[in-house]
Image 1: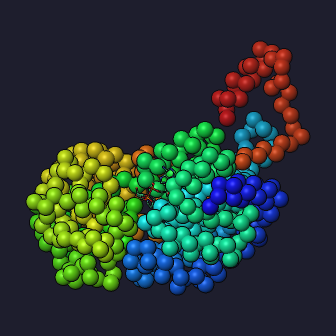
Image 2: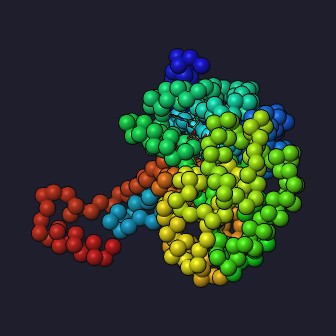
Length: 460
Ligand code: NAD
């Protein structure tokens, strides 16, 4: 795409936003209905495109890309009217007779930049936020999932005018150029490294932004847990999308007393889910490209592999690989894995768990498997992380009633459901004054006025 075309789209969106059309609540509802029809029409093409990009199976595409997006549309659709109404809040006696309201104001023209790992969902879910908030949006899908990117562009262009919603494809140079434009809000999903680039660009123009980033999400397995169930849920959460999930359990910290049994149970579930040759399973996703394939295979210490370890460069598949006796100094613990490797570390007391997690501070997710309430609550309160589950993995993302987001290295801000509406709007406080006026607040200030002021602050 020519950079000139980006300028044109950007300017047209600014103009369109200024017509006030996008602020109308019925307009927003209609656009959401259109988006739903578009997704329904394109469902098959989306499945095909994601299969082409990294051999993801239809079930997982529906579960984690199409189905979850449609259910989010359903969740927010009937609530937009209520969310858009000015919300009345209490007014202190310093303003006798006055009323205070919080108005929700769209930001204007928003930029949405997305990663490749959930190439449809992570473009469209933020777009739902932009629409319900009353904004215009430019969506930039990842260049690493070109088939999905193409379909998203085709779908959006069929249903929406570019001056309202536009999809811009292209290499990283395009992202860089987009970041030079004075958008009114930026929603970025991707790595912490690029998150810093985005925030730096946003800072130059003081553009508000939400950053949904990644990190090393720990999975802590206590000796009191149900070993079989824990293994089943860890294996599922880890291998979904070929291990390329921002909230996948990155590594396991298992209690010394149950570690061996947990590993055996995990082997059992890998075989149950994907058979003796997982790389041939129709349900097992490929690695997105050769660069990531080489990066992930380079993290495997063959001497420590207790299950799996093989790979196929042609199909870009890496076997589910359990790596035992891992320490914090192993290569696999340096950075987010983003692939089907399961490093196992062990602990005997909770301080050791905290120490390990603190090395890669503020993970996006944390999972704890335990039947011990005290252990569970201690982990939740002592460790800082984005969000997570007790006795499960991944599923906290599926609740539209709760915020999804990271902290520190794993992100800033949150979204989903009402939080998406909040993310894409500014809260504007409006005080509507009454005819009652307090005379002593005006200069020249007398001593008596000061006394009255002090009294007023004591009372209020
Ligand atoms: P990435 O940061 O490499 O790319 C994300 C987007 O940024 C892409 O659109 C890409 O084109 C663009 N980009 C890349 N380099 C850029 C640069 N120098 N300047 C400007 N833009 C640039 O991330 P990725 O590899 O696509 O995705 C994987 C990462 O995303 C992982 O860290 C993962 O944990 C994270 N992630 C987070 C969430 C979340 O919801 N928090 C969801 C999915 C993925």
